[in-house]
Image 1 (cartoon, one colour):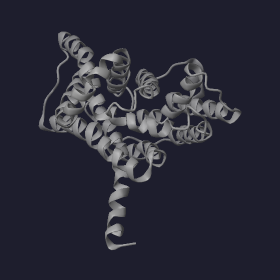
Image 2 (cartoon, rainbow, N blue to C red):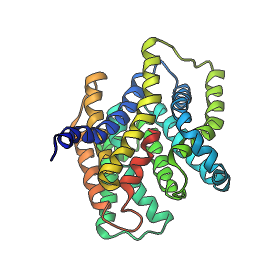
Image 3 (tube, rainbow, N blue to C red):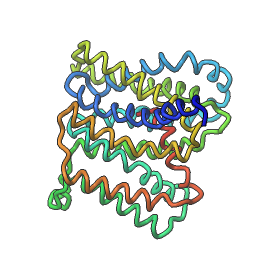
Image 4 (cartoon, rainbow, N blue to C red):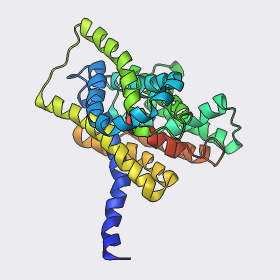
Length: 316
């Protein structure tokens, strides 16, 4: 191996490590800003900033693919509503009432939700081990939502915030499945810019309702800096680095980096939010990851879930 190649290897692995770190940061900042910036304000302005960064590079692809956007307009609406509007808004709403640690662990169930919806909507037949994986991961989600308390689970007295975050994960699972229906010839960066533009149609009225009820942001240099981070790092830079990782390592291998999100998130939550990591977190995480391993056995629809999900993580 040449000196140049040796030098490049650590930089190449940063392509795998930085995207999940940036995506985990979305949850940490969403929790940290819960009292300073209302959820709809945070969601709207995060995407305004992202659009500023994306549009210069995406514009030529938007002009090239505009006819295909019209042909697939309802698919674009579904992608915008589930992946941009609902996912982020529900996460930010949920983080007002639950910890970033819980939200990050629930984020880990997305691949299993995709496998479940693939079976329901695409009539994909699952093997026995895949059903077992789904059940095991669902049990892990239940452990986290119930905070490890069996009585809480049986009484169905779950945290409002945890349920909102789980609904966000359902929304993102649907988004990821629908993303597979987008023709390959449509450039993904241009597609993302168009999704954000469509999302504004929904986010601006939601922001207006929030403002109408007198819910306003408390702007500070720290809040503005955090908002700039959301618009630049998890929304744009992570996407660019991940695509570089796909080019170097392949989609399947690069897609595995998604499982680092709760790992980085747990560390960040302890360091910056002073959250505690409980035994039920570890138990729930172990169940979810084991379930993912069982559920993601190769099959026609499910075999590319990890890479497709990670490509969709531009929205986190």
